[in-house]
Amino acid sequence: MIIYNVTIKVDQSIAANWLTWLQTEHIPEVTGTGCFTKANILRLLEVDDAEGPTYAVQYLAESKALYNRYIEKHAPEMRRKSFEKWGDRFIAFRSVMEVIN
Image 1 (cartoon, rainbow, N blue to C red):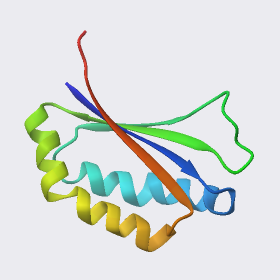
Image 2: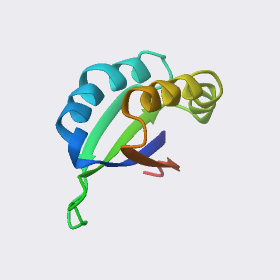
Image 3: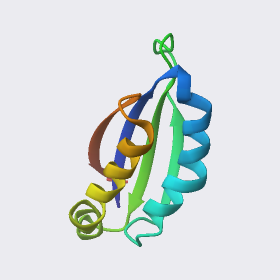
Image 4: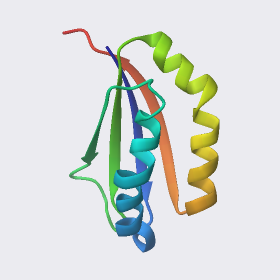
C-alpha cells in the first residue's frame, strides 16, 4: 500500500470554501482516476494557524505503479486546476510513503 500525502497550508481568506471544494470536487476527481482507493483529510494540530489552517490529504494506492500512473497522467492537470481556482492562496508539499504493516 502506498500513501501519497499532500500537506496544504491554506490562506484564511479561502479556508472554508477551499475545504468544501476539496471534499466535493477535488478528492472525488482524484479518486475517480482509479489510481487511489481512498482519501483521508486531516487537519494538523499544534501548528501556527494565524494565516490559515494546514491540512494533510492522504490518498491510498494499492501499488507504486498506480501512484506512478497518477503522477504521470493526472497530476499535472489536477495541479493546474487547483492553481487556476485558488492562485497563490495555498501552498502544498507532497511526500510518498509505503505502508509496512
